Length: 147
Image 1 (cartoon, rainbow, N blue to C red):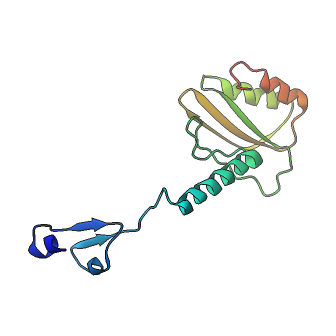
Image 2: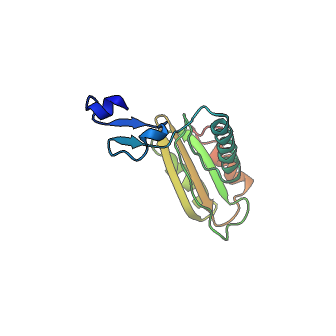
Image 3: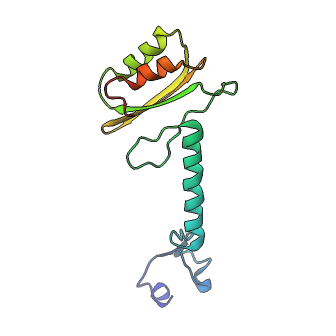
C-alpha cells in the first residue's frame, strides 16, 4: 500500500487483494483460480468422470493428452448402435477404406467427424442403420485401424 501511495509502484495486480486495496484505480483485482484447493480437486475429478462418461456413451474426447479433442452431437432420432468410433494411424486413405466398407454394405453415413493429433486419427461416424458384424469386422481388419 505504501509503495502505491508513494508512486514507487504504479499498478498492483492480485488474486488475493486485501480489503484496503479494493476499489483503488491503481489496483487490478481478479478471481483466485485456486487450482489446488480441495474444491478444485473435487471439481477436476467430477469433470474427468463426466468426460469419461461422454466418451463411453458418445465417443467424444475432451482434454486428452494423446488423442485429438473431438465431439459430435448425436442426431435426435439416432437409433442405438448407429455410431462408430474408430481410431487409426494418421496415414492416407484410411477414411476412404472405412467409408468403402460401409458403402459396400449399403450403409449410409448421416454425419461424421475426423480429427488427428500427430500419428493418431479419430473418427466418429453416425450411420442411418446399425452396421452388421461383418462390416464392423471388415473395418477392424483394415491395416492401421487401432484395435
